[in-house]
Image 1 (spheres, rainbow, N blue to C red):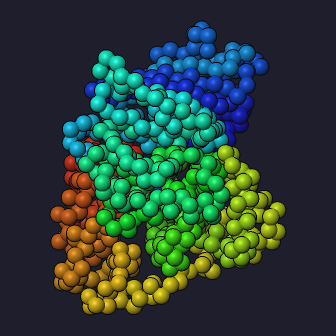
Image 2: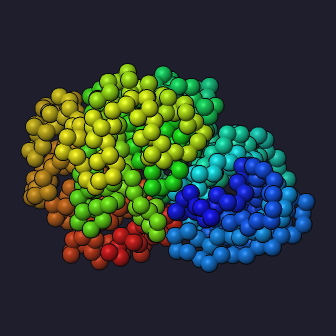
Image 3: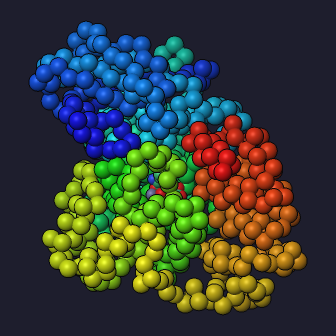
Length: 587
Ligand code: BES
Ligand code: ZN
């Protein structure tokens, strides 16, 4: 027995799933999917064998082989992180298994929204979030990036609702008050990229290969915000090679979506907080698009090598940004990233878990949602920047392209990257002391530093009340840096004067608004508490929830308020966010 992934029961000695068919009916009343999945093996079994599948809270009714003959199966012991795996006893010569089941009402991947939680307020909404290990709460599968699968799917939904998937739509038909939408995903994907949404959805074309989906009332502003998507695609293709997924559609989610964006193939999911009205947050689109190469095409084999996914993607995101908006803009984002990184590293050190600041981690027994941090993103980015500087850009671009070419539609670990570097650029890793980055905690003292005149101008005014004229050219990113760099010692009247002059309380850019709320909370001000309450009642993006709840929870005067707010709003959060915030408040 050998398990390639500490977060999956997938076993190398057992059959490999290569394709599946999934047919699911969506029932909003019971908050369940009733479904059948047929898993097809890469090759027929040569002898009778157990097949261990990841599953969480699935209620299985029937398991058979492909001819319909019943197979023996049992649920394996429940594990708080892994779920309740399913063991199917597969006979010799089998090419697949079929499983009928329904999902649990609290499936960790799924959020079932009441009409009141949507923009239109009239129809319910359902969406999935399978990364890191939640696909198993939607269907029994080998839920590890070490096993890629293609699939066909159908989703039956109440008439009047639209189903979309991160796959190619094939057709739909209506009958007896239901509509069934059919999809096909011809490219092999890791299971965490399975994704769908059901709701009152409409779309608008942005380019021949991209359209934006969202609730009808948001369509005009979404189409405006993301109008430049084809330029992103063109810049990315120039850097990383042809786009392999045919379409790059966008889905603007309800506000409870727990991430900024999720790189579901062919259909990136985005938080509606990106709709700032000034395109100031489109770097998130660049990031999710970059995953089409780094992550979706070349995937980390398990969560212990997550930096190969997110670190590479942040690097690629900033290269796209540099191509479209210039070097300074990319450097500004790098500076924001460095600020987050330093905070995160300090937090891990304080918590006594500095090993989670290594790029290569050990995560057996650790929930990937709990281990999640900016470290793989920003420390990974810095290592790649250091390598790029040491190799020279042209050489490093070539190294990256050959890495992507060699492992496309594959799964990689850190040793694969080390071997690739040694082969294509002997001595390069040693030049930057890469093993220290990879296997030691913290940030090396010689890490690259962001440089730009725009950064200097922000730095010079940080901690002051600038004249409006001195900052007339500042954009959202300057303001975000200004607020994040501000000393946590500003007095109430200084905060009030800043807000009176620059209106952070009503900033349309959510990053700026949250940076303001955090600054005020961390300076001990209570003036923003009503704004914090309102924000936490509205938005479910974990990047904002975590620091805001941490700040409230950490101040004796507001610790009880944090718990009250969670009691009030917790039920409206996605199950992943609910669990993460509950864990944070229990500390
Ligand atoms: N794939 C991630 C989101 C994710 C990571 C979901 C781990 C579940 C587990 C996505 O690409 C991402 O990184 N989103 C960022 C956006 C950003 C760095 C621009 C986010 O949501 O903040
Ligand atoms: Zn990402």
